[in-house]
Image (tube, rainbow, N blue to C red; front, side, top):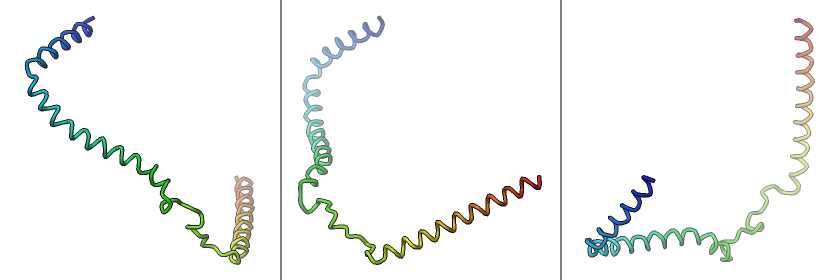
Length: 107
């Protein structure tokens, strides 16, 4: 109830003060309006830039613009190296399991 009464009092006081200070109110609006338009336009331009960039052909991201750095003849070499590392990992895992079993037996 107190919030309701306070809101009514603030609204009536706002109307009275607006009528008293009408000219300064218009000066404030005249001063703030260009700044609001400027910042609003900048924000809209910033947000719309992605849409414009997608429509322009020289901004489009095609796959041919980013060629693969790996030649096709190098791929088997890397696959072979990956298989070697996988085998090494498996060997190290088995050695780790053996040492764990030995530690359990010692305890």
